[in-house]
Each structure stands twice: as structure tokens, then as C-alpha cells.
Length: 145
Figure 1 (tube, rainbow, N blue to C red):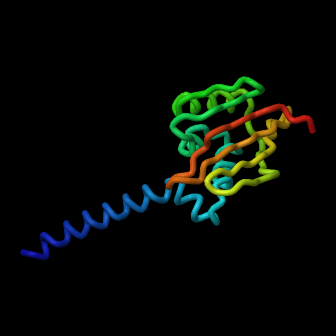
Figure 2: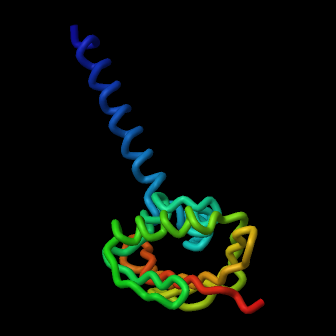
Figure 3: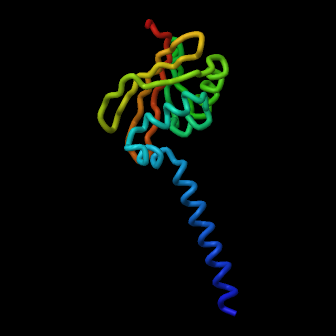
């Protein structure tokens, strides 16, 4: 009789552990830690894919987005919509980081976004503390190169 009760309990515990591991596997902090602490690797991947939804997991609650000299202070949800609109107009073909600098708690990176018709410069400012790295500013400008 006891074995009948233990098996479902073990199954429930295993399911809860599996869900917890799945949750932590997709958190920004865990992704950055598993990639040598470089927060720009997963961020770059989402920019290259034009995936505003996944990129938004890295957004601070409030951030600045400056596209072609028009800075906007916005919430995470507003920033997500702005980036969706941007990616629909400027579909990424490739993205690469060309420079990284800074020390915790603030780091920045400069990258080149190729849209097929033009190259754009992307500057990212990321707060690496507290527990979850957060993008505080995204600036996109036309490249002079």
C-alpha cells in the first residue's frame, strides 16, 4: 500500500525538479554564466535572429532605446514593441560584436548589424549586477563605415 503512495510522490517531485531546471535554464543569469559570464553572447544571438521577445528577457524594467538619434525612455513592454517594429523594418542578416569594455556592474558592447541593405552600429549598455544582467540602453545608428 505504501509503494502506491510513494510512486506518485516521486513522480511529482521529479516533475517539479524538471520544471525548476527548465525555468533556470532560460533565465538570463544562467545563460550568461554557462557562456563564460559573457552576457553579450546570448544578447547577440537574439539581435541576429531579430527576436525581440527573447531579447526583452534581458531588458531592465525601464530602459532607453535610441534609434537613429530619437531616444525614448520606455518600459520593458514598450521597448519590446519598439524592437519588434525595428526588426520588421530592418530584418537582421547578421550581427557581430566588434568591441566590448567596462567592468561590473556596467559593461558595454558595440556591434555591427547587417540588414542586407545597410550596416548599422548597435551600442548596448548592460548592468551586470544585481542577480540578473539587464540592458539599460540600446542605441542604433547608421554606420559611417
